[in-house]
Length: 56
Image (cartoon, rainbow, N blue to C red; front, side, top):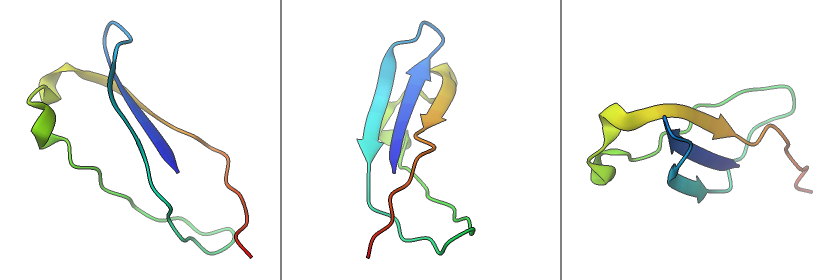
């Protein structure tokens, strides 16, 4: 999965990704460390890539 966090001006604050295993038609929670940016109050939106690929 890929996560892109942007500020109110559309500037990317964090752009990260990781492999996450989720069963078909299921959901999971994935936490991203944000405190290191020191700018938590500037986060305007978080975009997550909605596409997934099957791992066989």
